[in-house]
Length: 199
Image (cartoon, rainbow, N blue to C red; front, side):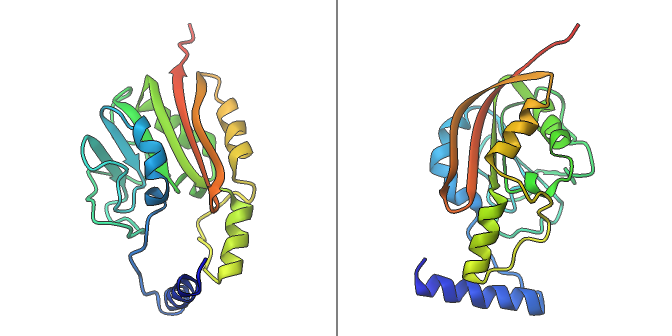
């Protein structure tokens, strides 16, 4: 990281922490868009998008009515507190479900995965972007950036997410693409989900 970026983050972090000043910032989605766009085919949604949806067309933005992140100007299409409420969308609606830097804020990861999968068509792509928490914390400390206080899993990362996915007995999945911290602390998983019907 260059000196200008370091100073910029340090100053913004201090102003946010001390005075509550909010800044627009580059979204985590913008860092990985080139990798995941090929898997965002058909009608999809971006859950917890903070103003920067993965796609600008054929993509419903699902977030708080007033998102706490300000990474772009895309409007909320379906207002919802995904952590506490059911997503107000019919089962098997979307060809892909994308979510970036939301799942680490949810205490019950398996529950939110079920919510995402419920609205995804069988055979559709579940695309998750989330931090490797230990690497995220190390980078924040190194550059003086305040850590997101909403992260709830000290062991969040690639292996943690695989364990959560493997705990879901009503799906099978195939990893179509993954990246484990090739871009700073970001983990990217693109999973083709097959729903299993139990009789």
